Image (cartoon, rainbow, N blue to C red):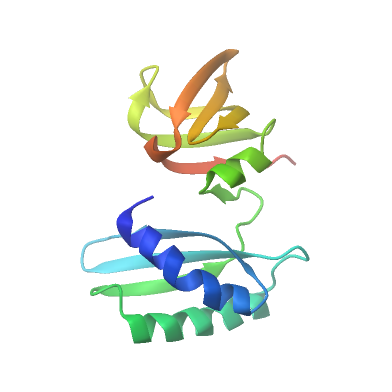
Length: 151
């Protein structure tokens, strides 16, 4: 996870949890002079629009005081959804046996995009089975990972 994202997770976890939600993860996308900050929240009973609005107000207040992002940005607060992004070893571990897709910073087996089943998570190493072959990926090499929703 990038430095700014780590700082934001540290800064926003307590305020989000104070509302009764779990901070699932954060995406910070720099797009020139205007960036996007996505905050994903979760709850065992699900998340609705009022929950997102409440968390958005709380996050916005913290961001205004702490001011960790010097450029203009749009704040988006949502649930992780059915194709939930995965950010931590704990989250990948919870989805062992599930199909996922990951985008890598550095290629593994000649590819930066992998789609397969999570076989195991050992420390900061993920084993993903792609076309019957186990590939080992360092979690810090994953730029983005998502569960593939089944319908």
